[in-house]
Image (cartoon, rainbow over the protein chains, first blue to last red):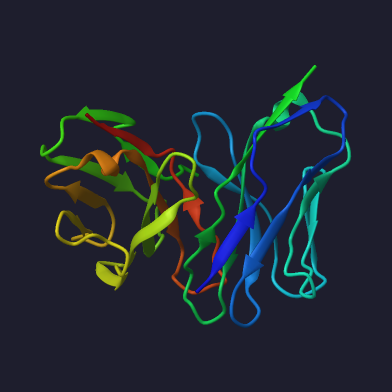
Length: 113
Length: 115
C-alpha cells in the first residue's frame, strides 16, 4: 500500500537558517506529492505540490522537487523566519485513487530568534 | 470566501459516552472528507462523501463510528461508544469534486479527549 515517511521532529533552527525536511514515499505508479502546513490552532493548508517526476513545487520561499529515482520529495527553504514555525506534513495521492491523501506523521519546525 | 467550519473545537468525554462533530464545507463543494489525526501521526481518511453518497469508508470503524451528509451539505460524525484510543483531532475537509484535480481545504479540527 501507499506510505509516506518523514524525518522526526522537532526541528529547531535559528532565524535565517537553511531548512530541509526529508520525505520519502512508497506508492504504486506515479503519485502526486504534496506538502501541507499546519500553524498552531489552524487547519492544514496546502503549501506546494508536484504532479510528475522532476516537477518542482514552490510557494512562500519553500521548494520541493519530485525525485522518482529516490522516491523523495524533500522540503527546503533557504532562510527560515519565526513565522514559519508550524507542523509540516508530506502527503501523496495515487493516480486513479480518487482524491484520497496519504500523510506522513508530520515534522514540527521551531524557528527561534 | 468562508472556509470549512467545524464545531465544537474541543470536547472532553468519558469512555463509553457518545459524541458528535459537525462540519460545514465550503459553499459549492460536492466532496467532503473526515480525517482522524492521532497525536504524533498524520491524518487518516475515515470517510469520503460525494454529495450525500459515500465514496470511501474503508477505514471507518463501523462498529462505533457513523457519519452522514443527508442534504449533501453539512455532515455529522458520531462516535458511540467512545474508547480511550479515539482521542484525536477530527478534521473535516472539502473539495469541489472528488477527482484528483481538486484541492482539499481543511477545517480547524475538533480535538477530542476521551478519559
